[in-house]
Every structure is written in structure tokens, then in C-alpha cells.
Image 1 (cartoon, rainbow, N blue to C red):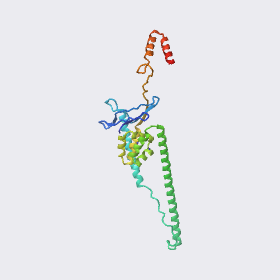
Image 2: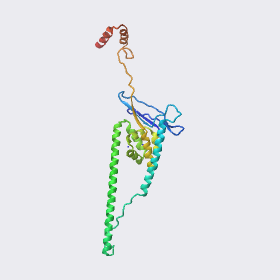
Image 3: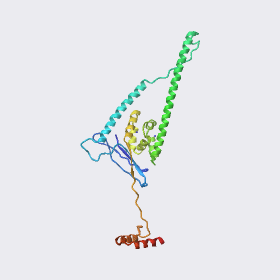
Image 4: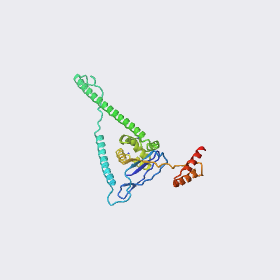
Length: 283
């Protein structure tokens, strides 16, 4: 549990996704579509955005955010090339485990004592190398497992911290769309894998686009680019409409009380207001 610009608005469970557009220069822009639900007025809704919002009007000079995106793209392209070179080097120089072979015997050495002793020394030397290789391999696997478990635990912690009520639905969509390798890359490589998963789960179009990247290095870079554009902001939910209850009038408003208050405000005498309220309390 990673250019287009996507905004995800979270108001408790409510999400708004900005669909992506590309301008004439090939840079990404977005339009905001908001779909809000009623919520507790004391709660804050959070906005998760990927990238910067579209500028309101064109300017002669290149906007700062466009320059920033171009710079990030150049850096990521350079990282892709570097990672591919590293993978090629590792593949070509991968160490092969030494072969132990059969232990020598006097018979295999044609009963030549000197040959037998020499072959026996070589055999024990190979055995030490094999054991060292296996121990190093086991240690590397254990370290990878510890690192993976740490990332999985971090994912669960961040998932709980974000506390998006519809996180399960978003997570299920990502799990059903990405293969195991792609899911592992997100959990292993993203700083906040939970937020990446949630943002993608709320934007099926972007999710489908990334699912088509089969190269692990390119996919990792794409996720890194997406995460670098994620933003979370908060805003207060609008207060609910106040309902005034009362016994007088079909609208629930005590019209007599309102009339007496209006009169009292002009005369400065609130005697009738107090009398009316006292009579209502007796009821």
C-alpha cells in the first residue's frame, strides 16, 4: 500500500477529483470539479492535490510552476537513465555462487596421497566460500524482509493517521488495478504510500494510465513524480442551516415575539417581551 494534475478534495468521506488537461506547450493543467457532502461544521475537509492549479489567465511569461515541472521532469528523466544503467551493471556483474562439488577421496585421487591432500584443501576452501556466500545471501534476504515489514507498518500507520473514511474503497480499486510488483513499488518507494494509494483510488483515470507502465523503473519514477505533486490542505466545512423552532405560525417562528421585540427596540420598553416569554414558559 506514486504531468497530469489531479486534485482530490476530502471532506470526511467526500472526494473531488480534478481531471487533467494539457496545454499547447505540453504542460499539464487542471480544472477543479467539486462534489461536497454535508459534514460536521467543526470538522475540516482536506484537499489532496497533485501539482499546482491551473493559472487563471495566460501571461506573456512562463508561469513559475511550469518552470518547476519542467525542471522536475528533466531530473526524473536523468534518474531513469541512471537507474537503468545500474540495473544493467548489476545484471552483467551478478555474482554466481561457487560450486562445491564432490568431496575428494583417495580413490578419486587414484590413491595418490599428495593429490588427495591438495584436492581436500581445495574442497574445504570452496566449502568456506559457499558457506560465506549463502550466509551473505541469507543476511541480504533478512534485511530486505525487515525493510519491507517496516514499510508495510509505516503504510498502516499513515493510513490510520489520514483516517479517510472511504480509504478501503480507494485501496481496493488500486489493489485490483495494479499488479503485485507495482503495489510493492508504491509501498517500498513512496514516502507516504497511503496518501499515494488514496489519491490514485480517487482518480481512476490516472490509476489506469499508470497501470499500463510495465517497466518497474519507469513506474517507480512515475510514482515519485506523482507524489512530489501531492498536496494536502484543509478548510472548514460550511455550517449547516439553522432551524428555528416555535409553536406559533406554520414556519416555526413565534411571530408575536418577533413583533414585540421589534416594538421594544423602537420604544426601549421590553416589558411586553418579558411578559410574553413568561406566559410561554408557563405553557
